[in-house]
Structure formats: C-alpha cells, structure tokens
Image 1 (cartoon, rainbow, N blue to C red):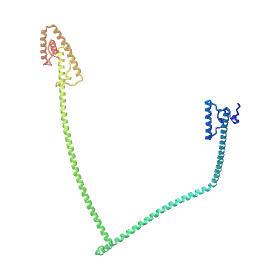
Image 2 (cartoon, helix red, strand yellow):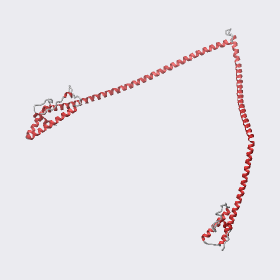
Image 3 (tube, rainbow, N blue to C red):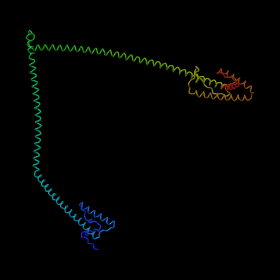
Image 4 (cartoon, rainbow, N blue to C red):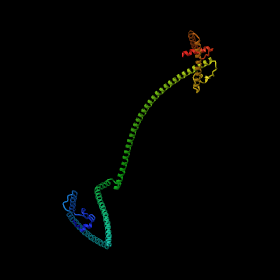
Amino acid sequence: MAMNVSPRLASAGAFITQRGGQDAEPTPRTPGRAKSVREAGVAELEALVSGITQTSQATLLLKKKKEMREVVDSLAFMKDEYNARMDACHERQVEFERRQDEMKEQVLRFEKFIQENDAKWRRAEFKAKTERKALENKQGELEELQEELRRAERERRQVTAQLTGLTRFKDYLDHTVDSSDHEYAEILDLLNRYRTLEDANSDLMMQVQQGDSNMDDMRTDLQNMRSETQNSILVMNSEINQYQKRLDVKRRSNKQMLEHKEREEESVNDINRDTWQVIMAIRNLYIRCGATMRTRIPPIHWDQFISSDDRPIEHAELGQTLDSCLRVVRERIRDLISIVEDGDARRPEDDMGLDASYSTSQLNGEGGRPDSRGDAATKGGMSGSASRRGI
C-alpha cells in the first residue's frame, strides 16, 4: 500500500518512528502541547513493544503528520511572538538611546550655567558659615560682657553695703579722736597706733606659740631619747646574752676539742709505742740472727730510724728496711727449723722432750736480754726451735 508522505516531513528526513523536528532548530513548547506529544510518544512505544498493532501504517502516518503539523504551527507561532518581542525591544532601545543623546546635549548646553550656580552656592555657603561663626563669637563676647557687668553690679552693691556698715565705725573713731585730749590728731594716727599694737601682739603670740612648740619638741625629743636609750639597753643586754651563750658554746666546743686532741695524742702515743716495740723487736731479732749466722749480713744503721729517746722516726726507707729484716729473720728461722728437724730425727723420743724444754728455757732467758748476742751456733739453733714451737 502506497503511503503519502508530507512534503515537509520528507524534506526534514524523519523516519516513520522518529519524532519530527529533531534536525531542525529546537524551539520552546507550551506545557499542554509538550505533554500531548509526550503522551503520544509513550503510547506509540508501548504499542511497538507489545507487538500489538491496533491501526494500520497509514493511520499511524496520518497521526504523525497531524502531530508534525501541530508542532510546526506551534513553532511558527512562537517564532512570530519572539520576533514581535524582539522588535518591541529594539524600538525601546532606539527610543532610550535617543533620549540619552538628548540628555547629553542638554547637559552640555547647561553645563556652564550649572558650574556658575555651583560656584555661587559654594561662595554663599562659605559666607553663611563665616557669618554664623562670627555671630557665635559675638554672642559669646556679649554673654561674657553681660556676666562681667552683673559681677561688677554685685561688687558695687557689696561695697555700698560695706560702706554703709562702716559709717558707724568712722563716727566712733571721730568721737575717740575728739575725746583723746589732742593725743591723736587724726583718725589715721589712731589706726597706726592700733596696727602697731596689733603687730606687737601678733609677735608676742607668735613667740609664745614658738616657745610652746619648742617645748613640745624638746619633750618629744627627750621621750624619744629615753625610749631609744631603753631600747638600746635592751638590745645591748640581748647582745650580751647572745655573746655569753656563744662564749659558753665556744668554751664547751674548746673543751671537747681539747679532750679530742688529748685522745688523739694518746692514740698516737699508743701507736708510736706499739710501732717502737715492733721496730725494737724486729731489730733485736735481726741482730740475734746476724750474730748466730755464719754468713755476714749487711749492717743497718738504726740511728736514722730511732731517736735518742728510743722513739721511731718517720723515714721513707723504714718499711723497706723492716721488710728486708723480716725476710732475713724468716730465712734464719727456716734454717733453724730444718736443723732441729734433722736433730730430732737422730735422737730418741725422750731426748727430744728434754731438748725442747731446755731450748724453751734458753729462749726465755735470752728474751729477757734482747740486746745480747749469744755464744755459739748450737744455742742459736735451740733458741730458734723453741721460738718456732712457742709461735
């Protein structure tokens, strides 16, 4: 079946299912027209999706053509309305520009007149300000003069009232001069006499007041001196008590220091005594060893270590000397021990006890004489054995 297509639809190149006017310029739509077009499109899509064809292709084409004409008519109407509005705006803009040009011409024509009026207004405003300021100054001066006039009037009234009040005193002075038996020639002489007496009275009163003030000052100074003296006495007594307490503390401290010093001296004496005894013991042992040994040992000058009163002297080599003496004594004791052991191995056991007691008695007898040297090497051996056993 042949389909008649509208020339406008064909020229637009629209498909049968395509909404007309897509390639054309989009134009605004009225709400009712857009709603109807949208509802028609939805109905058409539902018919296509469901696959149920209610009308023929020709009917659909006619419906689409009708819708296309309605859209085109609406678009033409809106274009005409838009063109009418744009023409009205253009006319109003032209009218506005014309009026603006006329206003500019009027401003240029009346600019000089406006400037002259502005200058005159400024001069008149400045003159008015100046005159107002001058008026305010004059009003201030007028108020000051009026206040001064009122003050002068008050002073005049006061002076008049004072003069009226002093008239009776003048009458009294005239009567006094007349009754003075020519002692005062005029009122001025009487006034001078009054001033002189008044000055003398003032001087006397001032002297009395000054004397009273001096007396009060002297009493105050005396009271202050008494208070200061009492305070100084109290302070001095307090200082004396403090010094007394310090003296007692110093005395007790001095006593304690003396006692401590005595104890230290006693301790030092004990240490020196013990040291002296040790040194003398080592000296006696060394001398006995040297006397009983067959080999010669170097002599030691004990004078540099022991003073004249048999007290030890601090010396740098004292420790080394005592150490060497003790080594010699140790070696000698070892020799004597070995000799005794050899002798004990050769004798019977009974003789060993007798020899031991004899050696002990010999050792005790020789210990009472620390400076003796002995006679023979045998006695030295026996004393060494006894010394070992006593240790």
